[in-house]
Image (cartoon, rainbow, N blue to C red; front, side, top):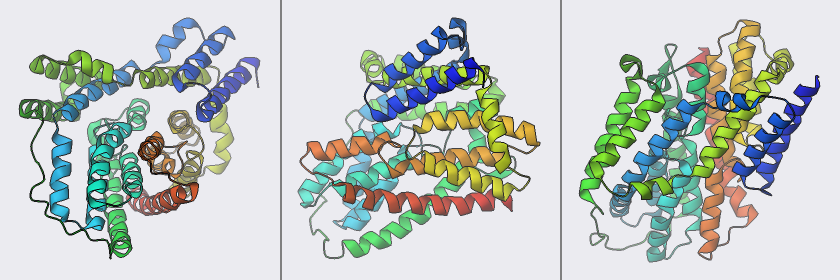
Length: 426
């Protein structure tokens, strides 16, 4: 290994360790890693700007801005109150409805934002029902983290996949003539929720709350904002689906949707800007630069050659290796960094072996998302959920935490694995 390659690898691994340990803010740690790569000659200062995928960052910021307006309109809270009415005090039904709601909305909104948005409602509902809210909050957080890969705009991994693989919005429904992320994850979610409904039905069989929910207050905080944000959100999604016809970059479409909505609303733009997680933006930008440094000095190619001994001509074997290796690793490493590196590794592997990379790419991002639900290190949404519970006086022991996360993650991974195999190997 050449000195530049060794330096790049040490800096990248060191950065990931610092991010996982939490001894330093993850954005600051990532930026510091980029600085070290430049100072040690891994890459030139101009490479930093060149390696950042500005198209993906623009799409991310644009979607976050639109989602901020949508959240402020009160639509999510309105839907949650309707779910409370429809549950009629059935805790099992309420648990499944809230989790499904979180999973569906996290296809469009960052999963941490979904937890922050739904947790106060769950706490309020559980207080009125006089039940411990921690299982509800944790289960909702798990489900919010579940479906971020279902659509291109839900989370960073699908955006990174789109960038590396050169695929578009509609490829998350059907790719290369086969079912991809959205139908696979929605099928998995349906089966998972049925199994958990049977479990919760048994667990809460003596906990049905008899109350009159007809008086629950319904209504939107701002009906005009609700209509505008819903309209522009839908319009942006349609434009993203048609980006090849429009011949426009995804990032430009996302930003145009956000700007158009801000001009239509004509207020609170500074509030929405301040609501964006700019630390995450800096972290993602630095992550692109760090992985770019690895690729420039040939570390990605070396990793591809190292993994090549485990890769053959069998799609079934290849998918299984990538899927279960990723599922295990993302529970203890920073999953965005791992997925970005492996996307490039798979690209090089496909060139080395002459195999199609798409089954491996989908296996990677699906397992990388679902496997992150095992621990707080893998899924920041779970850490946020735990902090909310403890802040409200409901301490969750490690045993209680893993009793919720391990079965959920294992079940979702097993179901998704067999559906993925059926979609890509038959």
